[in-house]
Amino acid sequence: MSSPLDTDPPLQSDWPDRPAGQPPKKKSALSFAKELPVLILIALGLAILIKTFLVQAFFIPSGSMEPTLHGCDGCHGDRVLVNKLVYRFRDPHRGEIIVFIAERDLRAADRSFFRKVVDNILESVGVSQPPGKDFIKRVIGLPGETLEYKDNVVTITTRDNKTLRLAEPYVKFKDPQPFGPTTIPPNTYFVMGDNRPNSQDSRTRLGPIKRSDIIGKAFIKVWPPRRIGFFKTPRYGEPSAAAGVVLALPVWIAFRRRRMLRRSSQPARRAA
Image: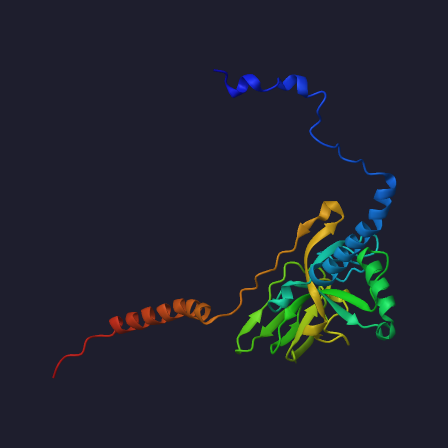
């Protein structure tokens, strides 16, 4: 009795004469040319979405943030990436570097819809600059706080009446000109440049920055390559009730010890 394997034709003899199927058609140059505009539109759409909602690149043109960010005469202008999504979920923190709208271009409101689309595309690919003027500074004072700058030291009185003197190792250029005290209005932030004597910030006519004018948080330097790195938010040692107890504890112990020594040195009274 023969098995099914004995009736099958040999596989090797079938391969040259029986292809598995129709070979795939090669794409012509004309077909690629038809697809190219669609690919360009998709790339531009993604660039606009990323620039509008997620991340945007900014060029540093001045030295107001020296030495944290280079932009002074003779220095190579740094480029930073700004996270535009983070402040949709939380408020800015003290010490963070932010980009905000300093001056709005009133002519931008009169642009047609088509012009706005074209300008947005050009801004997304870096061909043109956005209308208005954007600044980059560091958040120093929060809404409702009272701030004073004197003897090159920033003193903050928080909303719960606690005092905080900021240690700022990133400041290399001091400004002897005092400022304040001033109370920061609600929904605004007091910003200062790290280059204190050469910074147009909240100490000038710019004033505190509205929450709605903040574009986003600068989180990384991307150019030049030798300066690539993330920004670290400094920790200023915010005052707290627990910290006050810890500081007062040694004083209380010394007072109690002195009082006990004074009592032990007095002669004992005799009972009548």
